[in-house]
Length: 407
Image (cartoon, rainbow, N blue to C red; front, side, top):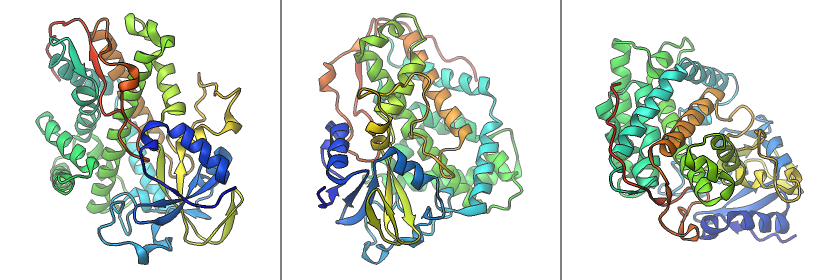
């Protein structure tokens, strides 16, 4: 095996990540040394068994970023600081009993959401977005649809008024893009969340924010605000990419052709296959070794950072049969994580409902939908972390708008 670390950047994460993970596994084994922006070292866990071990042992592989042995080498303007934070009062970086209490607070708040109301919200916003394009006979299902829908649904679940939704969409997308609008976008979200918390403390309602504030575990307003920000960011972009990646699969793979013409039975299969083969969240930072140990044949030093290679583990040959995985009904993928810090189950249910309903509404509303460009012309965002399309141009027979039903 070679020992030279692999840069966790470059166009191959955009064009051929599966082949790249295969080469990394060949050259380094189940755990590969990588370097992040600024030649910052880390380990990428690619093995299914090894990832299960790391995520299942929160004592040895902690979520406490204060353990990192590289902090002295990290500049104040390091571009990954928003992703790998320090002293952040959010669920991402709490450990032990306090973390379990935060998971319970979030899970209880989301679990109380009526599934029929949730689906109704998705259908309402989906119809509104499709009304804007259905008469044109063409659309970009990423920019016009997938990137606008999940955050609108989350906003109404939180308790925001409908008219605040578009502003939250713009702010969140600006923050995720990481460009000039990232800081203003983040500030808009923080200001909006703070105002909503203040209003709900004075006027509780049947929404996620009110239920989190009613929790008796003693979390501060700052902690609740941070968790709401994490939930919105984690719930929006991966769900948008789940919608886009699933629609791409259904439009390019003949196995799902029947679902494009009045059928729905293959939607769930396509969505599950995406979680195995084209996961929206490819890699996640991170875990930190609390002491020296060995993993995948490598010596891991105390304080080393480990990145969770979710897609790499999903494509591990050890969980494959003749090079493929039996995805139908098989939910043993890592796309939602694993262990104490995995995505809470109620959040997974919300994401699945939003994504599935969004796809079904497209299939219902846009007859004879087809790609407007060759499949090989579709491109991905250049990110080793999230995997989503830059655009999904489609054409269809123009249809009249139906108008959004009342809330």
